[in-house]
Amino acid sequence: MVDQVETLYLIASFLFILGLRGLTAAHTARRGLILAELGMVFAIWGTVIHPDIMANLEIAGFFQTYKWILLTFFIGSAIGIAISALIPMTRMPERIALSHAFGGLAAALVGVSEYYREQVIAGHMDHTTMAAIGFEVLFGGLTFTGSLMAFGKLSGLIPGRNITWPLQNQSNILMFGGTFVLLVLVTVDPSNQVLFYAMAAMPLLLGILFVAPIGGADMPVVITLLNSYAGLAASATGFALNNNVLIIAGAIDGASGFILSVVMSKAMNRSFRNVLFGAFGKVDEEDAAMAAAGGERVQEASVGDAAMLLSGAGSVIVCPGYGMAVAQAQHVVGELAEILEANGTQVRYAIHPVAGRMPGHMNVLLAEAKIPYTSLMELEEINEDFKNTDVALVVGANDVVNPAAKHNPASSIYGMPVLNADLARSCIVLKRSMRPGFAGIENELFFAPNTVLTFGDAKDTLTKVVEALS
Amino acid sequence: MLEIFLGLYIFMLAAFVGYGVIKGVPALLHTPLMAFTNAISGISLVGSLVAAGAHYNNVSTVLGAIAVLCATINVVGGFWITDRMLRMFKKQDPKADAAGDA
Image (cartoon, rainbow over all chains, first blue to last red; front, side, top):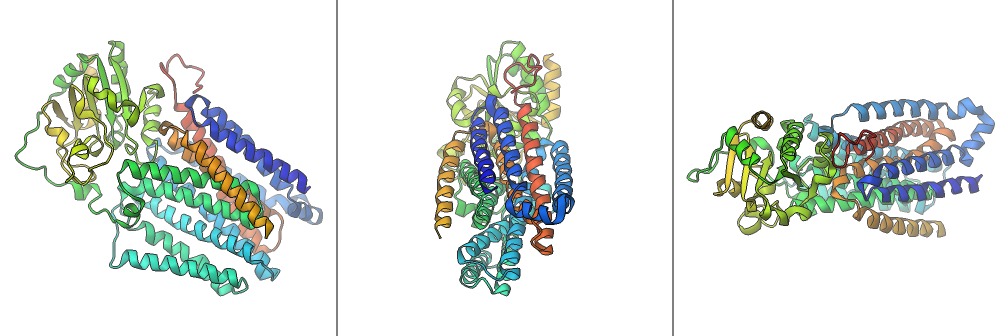
């Protein structure tokens, strides 16, 4: 039986990695997904014939053995499908945060369950298993409450701004250190139940305290980091249960979260340390809504002017920002692109890594609006092309097109990679009002001689432009 | 003791393989990637299934059953939503692409 289980797990691991490889290109991604799904079927198959379950099957019979598995599996599937089928693409970051919370909770519960079985009931637990379970409940608990906090902030259930209190970082680090000491102590003496439960409870508190001071704009980094922790929790579960497929899947998830959080931090020009302990300040929109600097003048363009500029252009690069998604303007952007392309204009999209609220979010939003992925360009791919482009159309983006990041060392976003919208022959900025972006700073692009601004709701403006052109 | 080292080797190699493969995933697919790895890491289902099905004791069974619930939401929901996103990614000329394959 053990051989069968291990064989099935081996096949599952192989299919997971093969499936993941499929994701390296858009046209193979769905095939990869199917391979991974198949892998999951093998993993579950291998588990329901696990020796411990089979032993119970012989004593208790089919119904008694599988009733809880079947019941929870069906309820879980129903909930999973309902959430996934109904949630709008704009709320994807919340959905991901919530699933990290579930993943963390599952790992922590399995850890406690294992401790209860081996130590409390059977009374023997070796130190290495204890250490693995310790890491499991540590990462699991931290991921659970941390992700719930991230979910709350993203969905607006709790204030998105950074919640701060005196000696915050010091007390958080002290508590983290304390939890780690508990982990060491409980590894040395697994029989001390009080220590174990204290160690299991601490990460729950830590998750809340760590995420509370981080503002809404920094949530992409938090989500990716929690993704990594969820993976490490799964891996630790694998160590505790001597289950290799769990170790492998967890390691992959951990690596993925790590890579994405590095990508996000770089795109925001921030270090991990700065995101986690910086309490960036003034990150939420209300605080940033300060008056525009006086003196400098912007050139305003009417809807008609903008339409004329676009219809005369041979090439257009759209620079979307999260403001576009907020205004629900992505579908009308797609319509505009269709009209322009019918006129022979080349239309492409420059996607900044932090244009959305999580890695790759903007691509999904535009794909949903039926924009072909072949015209969605990454920053590095397209940034050199701006200077040969007639019009850069900035829709709801701000900091990611601010040229100050390139040449003004005094700017708080100096060094951050930005789209070269300023280098296009002309630049149309669709803007609700003269309000600075998340970083709360003025955008030089708006005052450039080749830039015009069209004020108003992005969706309304674009709808009128589409009407004018068709 | 040997087992833990075997596990650490597997972890190390899997982390490098994961890093190498995921490095190649374009930013275009980063959101589906997160949903995808999230579904895969729902593999902790494997651990919770044993806890829920082996009936070691009541506490383990109850904790295991809740864990199965959470993990299933991730596995089934994660694969579902990844597929929902990937179906939206279309090549040039979306109208001609009636088959819906991306």
